[in-house]
Image (tube, rainbow, N blue to C red; front, side):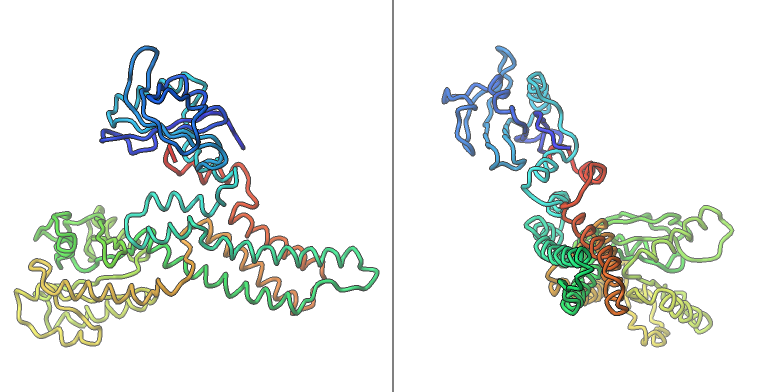
Length: 461
């Protein structure tokens, strides 16, 4: 999969801007850019020192396209590990496209998505987990997601994983050696030490697998679903939280027939609030589809906001609400349930005393009353996640899959040692566990895997 031909892409966001960055990488890229760049210092780029800037013109023949700054990075001290040139030009869309087209005339092609980072990985500048963190860093939009992506890009759990894999490979080698000398009745691998090692690995992998829940929250946001009867004020609450008219508010029951989602930042973590269709029995097929989606969103959520319209509460129906809350708590016991009694600004009923055991919060979504208490409850939930207590947090579904597979093999190894299973079978499990760890960091990879990972990157990175 290693390619050394010249590739080019606009590395800055598309569209009009003050400046734009065009990146070129490849074994002959410096010489090729010499064909179109005329520096004021009269120094050819091929003679220029690495990591130096030069001011000059980019020309197409005799036509000046733009006045630019060009930086040369010589291999291996570049992002890709090969010769690389970056052109800073003015951000006119015409200028960007004209420079790009001119470069393409000189033994160069448009880079594939993620190809610069792929070359960086293939040239040993970073491992696969670090390369994947580059995409996460670009996509980060909160303090927490930025911090996590930066940690992963700087090595993350790479060193721990590599050390664990090295020890597994070492034990597998010793067991293979025993098999070669099986007739000599010698023991190279100490099974007690192997058992201690796999026990340590099991603890570390279990902690990493569990951390995915936190990592997913940091990376994709904390999903918070708003549910309740029609007209309980769900859309009004969403608008209040977002401080904008995101959802249509109407006194007609069943107005929201699909889910509406948007996000806000709470304590450096993205919170995704999801307004859903009101839960009720109805003959309307479209509304029923919306209610079905409501239950799907409940399953995906970490926090459920159960909204009750205080103005319709009475001694006849309050038991129905209480039973429904109990059922939701039973059906979704792994989720945080926050009961909200809405429209407390328009009624003085004291029926909500029956909801004290559920720590219900009285609010007015319309007036914004006690919304700060709701935010405080959400913040308390996030603090219970103990994000800062985890040294390493995984956010990638591919990593979770490989760690889970490795953990399964580790448990098989522990059982094999306990049951005194033959060394040849133990060796197979050890090799499989080390293989999965190798896939994690890219020590073991294939073209299909790499193509799938880097195809999700933006062009120019």
